[in-house]
Length: 90
Image (cartoon, rainbow, N blue to C red; front, top):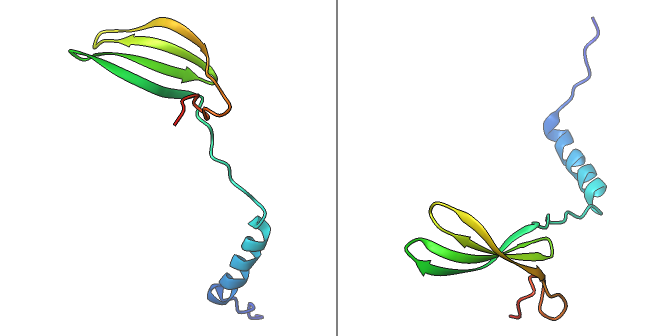
């Protein structure tokens, strides 16, 4: 019976790693942007607060208590440009 050719993973691993580096050299991964952002909260005491929440470019004002969450106001689109991604100046 003929002998199987000798294969050493230890010797082939550097070649394989180099081939992977060459293949993925130009691949760039981008971080996924989150569509929902908590922009700001203000405590009203007794576990109650108001919060500005942004979904995509639209902002909303919520009132939050231990028992409920209520939409208080639609604030409109977030500002863009010099103010930055979230519309708030640094």
